[in-house]
Structures are given as C-alpha cells and as structure tokens.
Length: 632
Image (cartoon, rainbow, N blue to C red):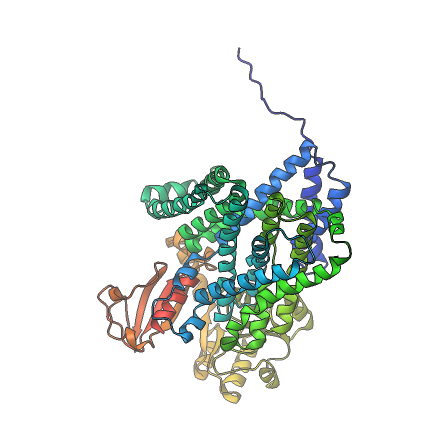
C-alpha cells in the first residue's frame, strides 16, 4: 500500500493578495460606471495603492508582502515584454531609408525624424538636469536626463486609436517616434546603470551578448516557425489544457530575463523588452490572437499589482528632503518634462502645421512605466534620492493625465473633415459597420433620427448626428463630399429608396450603397444606378462557406482586425512595365488580382504591371502601407 503526501505549504496569508486583486477589479468597473474616460486606470491604481499600502497590506517585512513584491516585479517585466510585443517591427523596418536622403525625404521619414527627435530630447534633457541641480541633490546628471527622456507608448497608442489616427502619416510619426524613444531609452539607461554599478569594465560586453542572443533567436525562430511539423503541433496544442503558445511565450520571456539577471539586475527590464520585440518580429500582425491571452494574463493580474505596489511603496515624507525648494523644483521639473518633448516636435511643423506639431509634443510628454522603472533603478543604485524618486512617481501620474487632455485640446480633430463614410440609420448593422471601419482607421458617421437611439450610439463612443436623412441640410452639416461613401440602411425599403433619390437626383452624389430586397426594390435602385447589397445572397453564401470551407471562413472573419483586402491603383511611373518578381513586395502582402480596364488577371512572377492597373492586395496594415508606398 502506497501513501502519497502533497508537499504544499498552506500557511501563506492570502489576505493582502485578495485586497490587491479586489482593488484591481473594482477600479476599471468604477471608472466605467462613472463614465470617467480621460483618466488612465493606472493613475487610480497608484493613488489607491498608496492608501491600501498605508492601512491594509501590513509590514514590508511580512512574507505575504514580499510575495506581492515578487508578483509586482513579474508584472513590471510583463509590462516591458508587452511594450516590446506592441512595437511593430514591420513598421520600423519599412521606414528605413532606401533612397538618397534629402531634407524633404528626411521630414517624411518617421524613423529618421523619430531618432532625431530623441537625440534633441536627450540634449535638452541633460541641460534641464543641470538647471535643476541647484534645487536638488542630483548625483548623476546623465542618468537623471535619461529618466526625463522616457515616454509612454501605452498612453500614446490608445489615444491615437480612439481618434482613428493610427493609420495616417501623423499618427505613424507619433507611434514610431514613441517606439524609438522606448527602445533607445531602455538601452541607454541599462548600459548607464550597469556602468554606474560595476564601472566601465569588460563585463559590459555581456549586455552585447544579450543582443547577440536576440539576433540568433531571431534567425533560428524565423526558420523554426516555418517548419510544417512545428506549425501543425502548435495548432493542435494552441488551445484547451496545453496552451502551447502561452507556455512557449513564458519560456521565451524567462530565457531573456534569467540571462539578463545573470548579467545584472538592472538589465532584466531590457531582457523582458527584447523578448517581446523578438516575438513581435516572429508573429507580425498574427500575434494579436496571442495578444488577447497575454493581455489577459498581464493586464488582468500581474500588471495591476505592479502599479498598486508602486502606490503602496510611495513615501510622501521623502519629499521633505527638499525643504522650501520643493514647489519650485516640482514646477520646473514639470515644465522641463513637457518642454524637452515639445521643442523637438517642431520637426513635424512643416508637414502638419505648428498646432498639430505642438499637440504631438504634448502627447509624447506622457510618461508611465519607464520613468518609474528608471527612477526605481536609480534609487537602488543610490544616485536618485527618495525625494526625487517620489517626484518622478508624481510626474508619471500628472503627465499621464495632462498629456492626452492637452493633445485633444490643441488637436480636437474634426471627424467631418477628410474622407469618411456616412451611415444613414443607427441599426445594429450600421453600428457594427462603423466599428469595423474604425478598426481599419477609417472615419464613419451615423445619421440617426430617433433621439433615444441617438443617445445609445453616442454612449458607445461612435460619431453620430441627430437628424433626418430626408432633410437636405443634414448633408451640409456632415460636410458631404464627392469622395464620401453613403450607406443607406434604415431597415425600411421605401425610405431607403427616397433617401437614395434625394442623394442621387438633388445632391448628385454617386457613391451610394444600399440594401436590396425584392424585384421592385432592385429595379428602383438599378434605375438610380445605386450599388446594392443582396442580403439574401450574402446569407446563402455565408452558409455555403460554413459548410464547404469552414476553416477558411472562420480564419478570415476572426482575423479581420489584423488582415484586410485593399485596392491599390498604380500611379508610380517607376513601376510601369516592371514584372511582379522585380518588385520587393512586403512578405505579409499577397497579390490577389490585377484589374486592367475590363479585364482581370491572377498575378504571377512574370506578370507585367501597367500604369493605371488596380491591384487587389491582401495583408496586414503595415504590408498594405508598404505596398501603397511602392505602387502609388
């Protein structure tokens, strides 16, 4: 007879973790119920974390508190990993200059402008650190400057996404500039911290070994993920109990974190970031399915604990070290943190105007995890005082709140200007279409007659105007232009016809799409030359796809946020008479069809392109952007 004993200790106190997890759960719910959208969740987590740290979590000497510190560190590493994963390697690679650099090309290249902006910020930051030294005990001006240089992609990206600006040139300039600042900041303060701790010794080359490991893993990984057997096993074990993609990801993170830890504690954040950057390079846009699970692990558990513990460890008494100079130091530090980002933003002025350039500078001024990380490492190395560390934590809170507010104030954005899609009728179909267009970076505006439905749509954060589509003045209000698509979807067939007649006959608008149904309605639309969608046929086709090709159908439907089809017209004279095989297309772009006049062709390597051809391309956003830049 065999007796087995489960050797698990049950004496750990879970109450502090319960309090922390409960707070992490309540905060986003409260902000949602109170409809507070402009305050980032992490700010409230830090603030309330201070109070539970002071009154509920107990002494830092307790074992349960140390477990929270371990989970917080794991959350911090996870945050760095996700920062690397969210960095679109394809976008950065496609921004590398391929032609002789002129001033005009320099200004239009987001990577070059981003690197230049970072260099200017670094110089300004160093002089800012020197100017603050009479007011505070700044032991290392260079490291202090590096702390101020940091930015927050985690704040910038959601703001641009909510405004539908990620796909435009302006949005791409800001995103790549923020990504460059993130990457270079992490690299610079990792090397600096290592030198401060160990001196300028040969051991610094160990950090370079981390980059060599990154390169080796990247080369091997690109071959590894293409092996049919590996892809098959990965697909089979991707779900259910195995979750092989999550296990593999955690293994990858820990390889880099442990390797970095052996080099030095201050290198761990760089290791976590590089592991995310590596995975981003492997998976490209396909990573979003994995991102859902990783976001759930990170933002659902580990990362909130990190920010709550930042608040719990915040010591307001440390500020007393400033005596009478605190307010002046605090004010000047805040001004410098904004100034060092706003001044380099004038590089964008020629392309976007001074107001948008300054708005971008304010948005780039947001700081969050990196400023806290760099300051915490400086505190541990004893080159940052507890008072200065407390100030940087406050600055993270202040800049995260002020930067998006100032950006929206200076650059309010007009959804009615530029190309847009006008959807008449706030039905569930219209709302879904507006959301899907937003995913692709396109502006959609709904015209809704019913006041109750208008308010419901407005609460969902969708652009909507209250008005009657049969009123001619409403189209002046939405600034209807010949380039705008108008989708007539009121769910009432006769009303759809009347609205289409108004648009076609009175307003002479051509880009109209509506729903057909029945021969009489079809005939009326045909007479008006309105493009129609046959709902019956679409439903039948969908059911057919589910029966005949279910895997392909689900793959296309479930990945519409990551892949899309676009028609690109060839207007680049350099492409005329070239063959497909002569053009270095992006690896995530698939040429589906070439349309020339009334004829269509399936392209292959020997196919010649002609000026005016329309190419149907399937691929990721970055692949489509790259293809547009080559053909247009």
